[in-house]
Length: 252
Length: 286
Image (cartoon, rainbow over all chains, first blue to last red; front, side):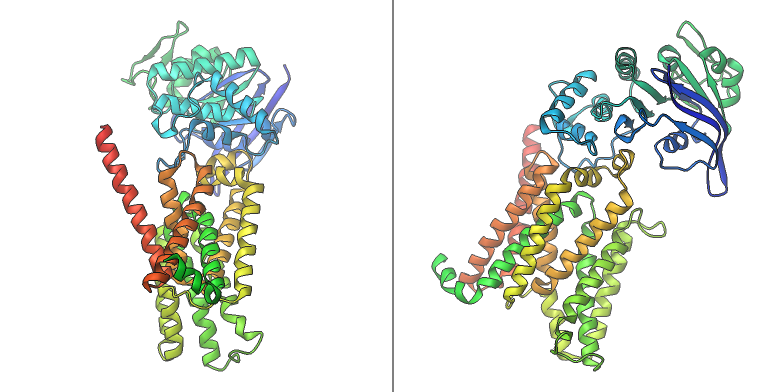
């Protein structure tokens, strides 16, 4: 599998504050990465660096020029920033995701149908965005990223505020895209158990450092306890156990 | 009613046409202002434009520049545009200023420029009268050139919307997503603010603060209740502005009312009716 991006000794920060140091990880084509760790540990800063919004302080970030072209990256934010006072339909909301990619109105329509189908929102085109449920809105956000037909999808906690079935459905949709279309995914979440179930690779953000690799290497009880400052364990049989009273799938 | 309006056409045709085209232009720009929830920025920019005119009149009053001598006779128009563009850039900048919200910065600009305009003209009865006329929007005399300038600006605005409508829509609705797809949102913000300043700077000198601000925000607010998609606002808002302004001017001519104020009153009444209908509708459906 060819490399999509590689971080070598990457350091990221704002002004005098260092957020991440010596980050080393390699994302290959078709990988399904989960970025884990407590709030404020630098996951979003890392994504912003990948999107070119932050400049690394030191180290190297090597990007595959073809697979990380702007028009081949899809980005899913935590939640929609569109004000509820603005009138918009699912069709308009999702198709605006293709801004910057030259295409005809027909091609745009085809992509819209494809993207909505992938997230099980077919038939919702004319529905008001404001009238959607929380889970449907998050799926519309994913569709807005998919409408770019990305080779590389970056998702920054799009499962925030979703109940467990909705979260699972969203991750399942992405898993299909990963397996069937070879979509490379970087997904930030606090759902350790679901990450373990769907992911192929993991990066645990731990007090300015990143442990990256396979589940066995990253999701060990020792690593999780150090990162979350709580005794946690993710078992291979899809169950998740907390000895510190942490609820199912929630972050500290 | 129509007959008396037609009779007045020969004398006031450019005033009427300029008033209508101004309404269409500001209603188009107003979609951006309303969608970004920067309504008070519009008021602040309009008021800053008045300060530009007051500064030009004060300079003439102090003898710094000769009055009614070309090119100094165009100084009020030039300073109106310069002050409004500066105010738009200052009030509309991303993330406000020094941690303050857009509302706080716009409020400061509005109050500072309003008080300075009056203070500058306090000892000049003629100047003070000019400022009052601008504040109360008395569209009386415009030149043919003014009409063509406003028309040119409107055509330019429509052309820009056709060329850059989709990225503008994304930037207006969701700047964070616009940045994520590679748009330079800082540059878009500066360009949009500059265009808002230019538009208000030019139109305020012709139609006054009340009419300019009314046409900027009210048709877009009305359109927001009539459409299902944001992009339709760019059609409905100018259409509402044009139809209401035509009706306002015809009624004003017949009843001998000032056309600017009557048009703004009609906009406000329409919006009030829509709010009431919406409230009633939501009660019925719930």
